[in-house]
Image 1: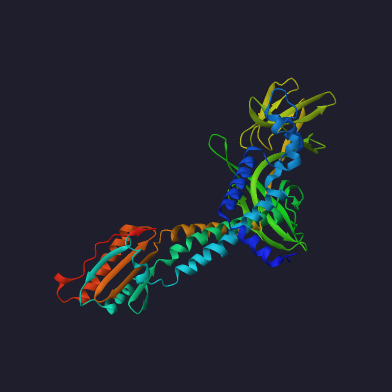
Image 2: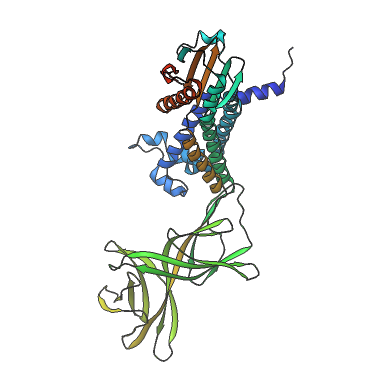
Length: 460
């Protein structure tokens, strides 16, 4: 029985990953799941999927193929963190890496080799020939000098000369592969080590991260820091619409030492020690008010967020007696607050800290406690993804560099020249014309007998 060489099987399997059709299949598969992830809402609770993707809905035939049971079972509610999607990314990365090492790099290495035009293949190069001319003044030295002068790398052997330039243009496909690999590695790192925390924190409170929205398989919180919301305020437009809201944050070490602080707002996050803190939302938490002129009882009431006439407002009640109470309605912090009785009748409008009387009882709203909505993210894959996109942009510029090759021979005063380029034929023709002019200047005293090249160039 023939012995199986595991080493050969392994390397053969790795080389098979470089198959173009297999890579395209994986890319289409990844694109399909990304599209599916954009259609199915991600990271929602179970009741959400049971409501919008019901099972055995007689009026919806799509529920047979896509329902909440299938979504939860296959992890379609968090596609980008599922083990099978990550494995597809890993296999696709290996496919690109194997293509780079087994196809692209050998191709680049082959492009750096000199390839002389010899009589054996000369008969098959007719479609490349630019000129064939007889002149006793033809010179290897002058044509080599002309090629070098216009930035060609030149190799000379006996009667044959080979030159090329623009090798960086052949590097761009490798850079594209490398950029995609880095982007995929960054995505995998984000899935394993990243996490997102959402917090609603009252002004003046100290907090630490605890309310997870998403956490990677290997994510780990940093327990060495505490955060405090020093202040929160809102900037309004002239029409009382919200222009921007701000939070003043401080970071403390466990020993209470201040480490850093910053004022954040929407689109102006706080970056610290690998964490990014975003300003996302706000809310009115509660209200402090005083009742009575002599005893002055300081009370605090939780406030309720409601919709009134399609406008968001906050509502809380103030007890006046055992059988009587009023309601305070707040639409924003800039304008007056509305006071209504239990029947919904507006009886007054007041500002903050303005004293008013209800049934001869003094009432004064002293403070409104605001919550700031913060999103805290740690994503170690972001710098890797950005680096991948940088390489991709760089490869785009490199792809515009033309790779040009020139072959020539001078045998028995017969000058044969051939050329090839992978793009920009017009610029290659210009280079040939410049080389011709320089070569003719140094080789022929009588310019009327100078070598004239009429280009016919093959574009790869």
